[in-house]
Length: 171
Image 1 (cartoon, rainbow, N blue to C red):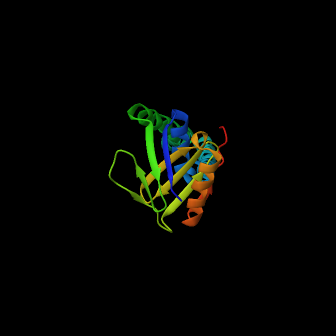
Image 2 (cartoon, rainbow, N blue to C red; image 1 turned 120 degrees about the vertical axis):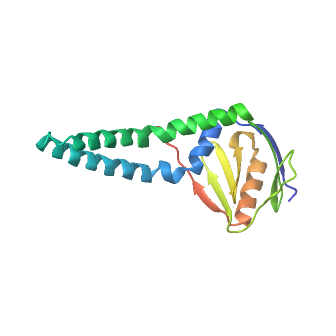
Image 3 (cartoon, helix red, strand yellow; image 1 turned 30 degrees about the horizontal axis):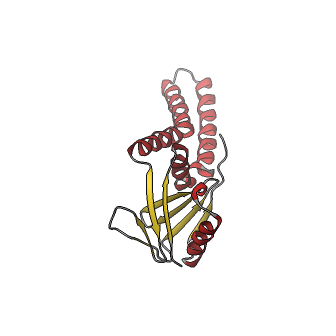
């Protein structure tokens, strides 16, 4: 296999989707469970405050729970949008050379080695994301032809990467 040479520019939405895929555990079921737990806790504190309104600390605790719920619901989404915007403004043009044993970002002398067990592959609606150790490479599906897409998937399978299919739903 000769490898792939990719030259592309990511949009803000693609960068945001990449960040969402990388944080899929925090954004999915874990977030919902935390919101349910906080809701139940809030109801219990509200009932306790209704029974004894002279205890101000219960009102303060309820107010804190409500703020925490708003943060859990909207905070990560807002932070992700801001981070994607900063990354887009910084530089959203990328050049990658993907070979059999490494990925090389063009313009740098470093090579990201592909190794069994240390490779994660995220597939979303519009993106392929390769995480090798601490390095992340995001490749939009729109730039890949059928043959390039098959080559990339064959490479990922060869290294037995942990593959995660991320389904993104509108909130």
